Image (cartoon, rainbow, N blue to C red; front, top):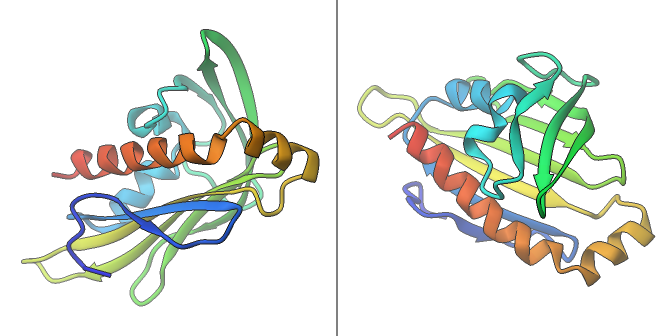
Length: 167
């Protein structure tokens, strides 16, 4: 994998997961701070469904609960979520933020420091949508509704938006 991906690159993640990565020319800690704050998710959401209103902490921690206001097909709704993993990126350690939706699927962001010197500060950012632990009937409905291909497009746009925030 190239350390200078300016466009999202698809990763092979199995039959129930869609995952893409992009290189962002910024410190992992700054990118993590953006994505660990649910009140800012609307700024990078490539699906155009996340609204500017969220309930919960401004930095998610493991076990925390939060909700975001959404709008799809013109219909507003609120989505309650639970953080399953939250680890700030640190020297030699990859960062991650992951939350679980009520039906069992997960959204995950990973942050891998590629370079920390002043001339070439960069982070490999990966976003994944995983239905592997989802309730089987819900996973079947998601497959029938072709959610994975739609989310693949949204993930690519979200990653582009993250990169644009830091370029």
